[in-house]
Image (cartoon, rainbow, N blue to C red):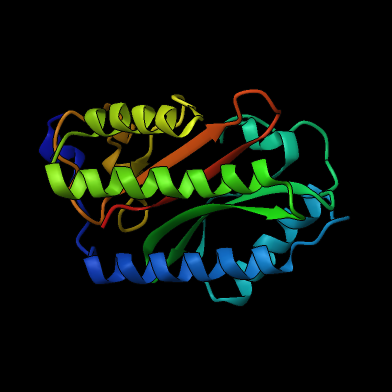
Length: 219
């Protein structure tokens, strides 16, 4: 498939609608994070996430709500959580949402910390920092998706974290984007266009069993 075809969109696509989907998905992330408390099971948090998305008026979910606690923050999207952990008083969790709003796909995710563990707090901040650095690099250089993830790995090492190279971002569009299958952002050999690609950053602590995740639309 050509680079042009990998960035194809449907007849209903608009950048304004993609931004609306982005805003609404982040609104859901923030509301879910505020409602998660120590003592909650991971399965309860995932059910809560679905309920909040419905309350906000999404069209539908386009990828499963994914909320990970503790050691499960090291697991990638395609992996199942281990057990059904309870969130601790000093713990870490991330939220990953993919929902359709007005026929356009939103996808957002971030990491949060309960308590005051300084390394967990640093890990959560680092995922966002690395995302921001890579997004700025994309805006400033117009480089390929492949080069973006090479840069992300370098920035993760500079900050003292390990980038999960099995997570490499993906396409979004007007729903259903599956008809515009384009592979991972980290395998895209041309310049990613605004409003079409999700940049995902997942990092791991170099020694302790937890990590952090952050994703957003390149726009």
